[in-house]
Structure formats: C-alpha cells, structure tokens
Length: 252
Image 1: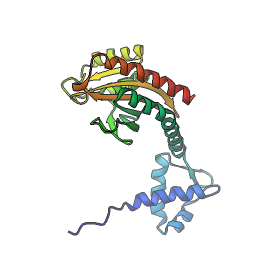
Image 2: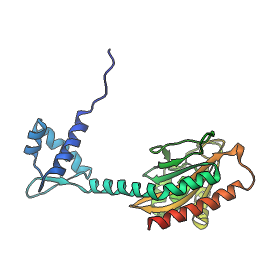
Image 3: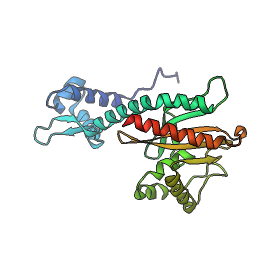
Image 4: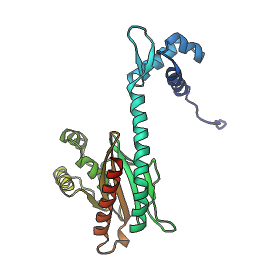
C-alpha cells in the first residue's frame, strides 16, 4: 500500500469551519445556512452541531433554532489569555532562578489528571533535564502533583486518589495514608520535595504560584540526584519560594 501524503479528518475540519461560521454570524446561524456554506447535507451538519453543542462549543436558541458560540469557547479563550499572562509574569523570574540555581526550571498548570508544562528554562551548555512547553506529566508524579493536590478541595483529592497511586519507581509513595500525610505537610510548609519518586536519579522541588484565569500553576525545579551537593536543596526551596511570591505579586 503506498504511503499516504498525510492524515485527514474531514469531520474535524468541518467542525472547525462550523465554529468559524458561527463566530462570524450576527444573531446566530441555522442548519440550512451552514449546510449551504459547507456544501454538505443538513443531516451531517446537524450531527456535527449536536456534538459541538453537547461539548459546550455551541448553544442553540430554542426559539430561532439558530446556533451561537457556547461557553466552552469563552473558557478556552480565557485560559489561553491566562496562560499568556502567566508566562509573561513568570518568564523573568524563571530566567533568574535558572541562572541562580544552575538547574532546570519549569512552570506547570494543572489539568484533570495531568500537569502541562507551559514554560521552561534550562542552563545553557550543560546536560540538564529538558521538557519543553506542551510536555505533559501524570498528576500523581512527584513533587509537582503533591503541590497541586494540596491546594484542591478534599472531595477533588478523594476522587483522584480513589483510583490508586501509581508506582513509577521503587521510591514512589503508594500508601494512601502516607500520601495524605505528605499533602498535609505540603499545605503547612508551602512546598513539596521529591527524591527519585517519578524518575530514578532525579530530585525535584515544587512551589505553588497560584491561580490565573482558573488555572492552578506551580514552579518546579529539578536536577540530578548524583550531583546534589549538601545545602543545595535548602537553597532551591528558598529561591523557588521567593520567585513564586514575586510571580504572584506580578499577577495581582
């Protein structure tokens, strides 16, 4: 079979075109008009619109039967602006922190069951841990996950932990009672530390930054356990907490 030039998903393209047409309309747009613009059947358009409506991307007026943009679009736009503001506020402090500590520094935001890196700084010309923007980590992975869960309501924590704790390494905390005790400690001290819990040979320090546009965020500094010098971890905690305070102040 000859190789395909590229994967195509017509339904995705049509859905995006529907959103574009709805956004350009005044007072909404109906199924017949959408079908005419797209050159496809009204039944196909109706099915796509129903899926977009179910996902919150479209709203259908019960009287006019015309579609307008749904709350999901505004939520995504708001979060996009929030991420941009967060990166702008955090960037200078991350650069300073990276230079001061000579370690990799990441800014992450909390998703449903993951952490997404939105900004990163790595020391130049050195072998360091690298993960660019867009990298996703499991929420229950080391220090950064503990920082995020420590800031969540008990019901949210219970729901996440109900699925159990994964064993990423021999040092991963898999006992629920012990994990909850560590969350209590994180709330009290304002930061989390890990040693070989998510990746063998890696330590990490995470500090909450706060919420921007509904996005919980945290600074995360990581390094190699083999090169960890006495007193360095205390310095990392101190400097990272200072940077987090500066970022929070800039976001206000």
